[in-house]
Image 1 (cartoon, chains in turn cyan, yellow):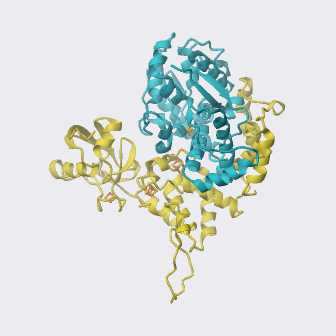
Image 2 (tube, chains in turn green, blue):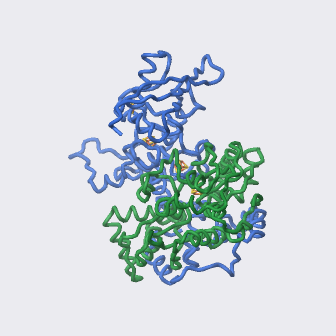
Image 3 (cartoon, chains in turn cyan, orange):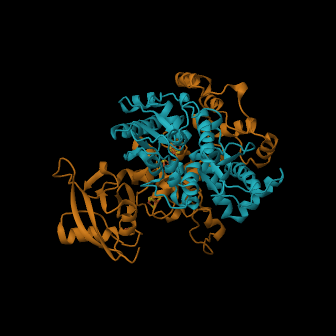
Length: 293
Length: 325
Ligand code: SF4
Ligand code: SF4
Ligand code: SF4
Ligand code: FES
C-alpha cells in the first residue's frame, strides 16, 4: 500500500484543553505509518457558533483552511467532529453554489488564495477505517483490549446530517445505528457495548447558554454507558471528550445520580492496542482518572 | 436488494390505552414482508388481520398530511413513506414500533400533539400583511424571493423533529425545530410585516434559538428535508442583523469566536468563557478550571498559540465581516 498522507487540521482544542488528543494522534499516525502535514496556517472553524453571528465570515475562514489543504494536494483530515462538520458543510455549500463560491473566492483573492474544491475532507476515524483498513489494524494489535467493555460515544457532528457526512465515507454510516466506532473497538480486541445514548448529544455546544440541558445530556450519556456495564467510554470528538471527562460533577447533580467513567479519545484507544505507552498517549491529562492502565 | 422479494420481519408494537391500562406493553407479530411495502401497510395488516384494536393515525398515504409519523427503533418516520426493506437494512429484522413520544400517548401510536401546536401557534405561523382589498393585479413573488424560504414551506407539521429534539425533551419551554422553521418561513417571506415580532419571540431566553444544542437531529429526521437547524442558524443571523441581540451569555458566546479568531487565529478557550459569562459569571467555572489546570488542560494567556499567517486572517475578518454587535 502506498503511504497514506493527509493535511492535518488540528482545530483549537488539540492545542489547548486536550493536549492528549494531539499527542495520541501523532503517536498513532506514526505507528500506522501515516504522514500528517499540519496546516499551521489554519484558523478556528468557528465551532458551529461563529456562523450564528456571521455566516459569511465563517464560510470565508473555513474555505481558507481548505484552500491550504488543496495547496498541498492532500485530503484534509480532521480530529474533531465539529471541525469535520463545519469544514465539510462549507465544502458542500461552496461546491453546490457557484455564486457563493465566487463571492468567497473574491475575498480569498485578497490574500492570494483560492478555494477550488479539489480536496476531500474526512475525520481521522474514517481515514483509519476507509483508507487504512480495520483488517490491517487487527493484524497490528499487540495489546488486545479484550478485558474491557468499551462504550462508543459517536458525537453528533460525525454522524449527522448523514447525507452530508456520507459524502466522504466509503460505506455509509447510519445516524440511528452507527457502526464505525464499534467496529474499531472490536478491531482493537475490545468488547463493544450497546446503549441508547451512543449516538446522542453530549450537550457541549449549549454548555454556557443552556447549562441544565447540557448537564442532563452528559449525565444521561455516562449513565447509559455505566448501566450497560462499560469499563470506559471512547469518542472521536474532543468536545464530547471535554464534556464527558470534565463535567460529570455538574452532570451528576443534574440527573441526581453519581456518574463518572474514564473517557478515551479514539486515538488513545487505538494507541493502547498498538502498544503505545500511556505517557505517549497523554493519559495523565484526563480529569476523570484513567485507572486501568 | 430488490432481488429478494419478501422476508420475515418481527414487529414489537407499543400498546397503551390511556383509559384502561396502567402501564404500556408490547405485542409481537412476525410477518412476511414484501419489498414494496411501507410501514403503514404493516400497521394496516396487523389491524385488519390480527388485532382490530390497534390504533394509529393515517390519512393521505402520500407523505403530505403529516399524521402518520411514528418511531421505528428510535428513528422518527412517516409510516406511509418508509419502506420496510430500508429499515431492515439498517436495524435488522426485528423492528420496534413506537409512538413519536411515549410520554404523550392517548392510545397505542396516537399521541396528543397539543404542545406541538401550541409552540407552532406561538410563532405566528401566517403572513402578517396589510391587504389591499381590491388589488389591480395579483401580488406575485418572484422566483428569487421565493427561494429565500429555503424550502421551509415544505414542512407538513408531522412533528418528527419536535419529538426527537433532545433540547426540547429536557427544556419544555424550548420552541423547537418545527416551530422555528415556521418562524423562519414567514419571516423570510417578502410579503410579511411581522418579522421583527417573530424575531423577538425566537430570541427569548430558554424558549429561543440559543438553547438549541446543535445535535443536527432535526435535519436528520425530517422526512421532507426541511432542515430546521439551517433555519435556526438563519434566525440567529437575523437576530444579529436586526440589531435586537441582547447582550447576554449566549450572544457573547457567538460573537466571542470572532474576537478570538481575530486576535489569535485560533479560539482562546479560557477567554471565550470569560467574555461570554462576564467577570462575575465566570467564577462558577473556577472549580472545574482548577481541576483542568492541574491536568495541563488550560493554556495561560501568555502561552496562547497563534495561527501562522495571522495577518491573512485579520485581513479577511476586516473585509468579510457582515455584521456588528
Ligand atoms: S455530541 Fe456534542 S460535542 Fe459531540 S459532536 Fe455532538 S454536539 Fe459536538
Ligand atoms: S439541532 Fe437543535 S433544534 Fe434541532 S434537534 Fe438538535 S437541539 Fe433540537
Ligand atoms: S420540519 Fe420536517 S420533521 Fe419537522 S414537523 Fe416539519 S416536516 Fe416534520
Ligand atoms: S398518511 Fe399522510 S403523511 Fe403519511
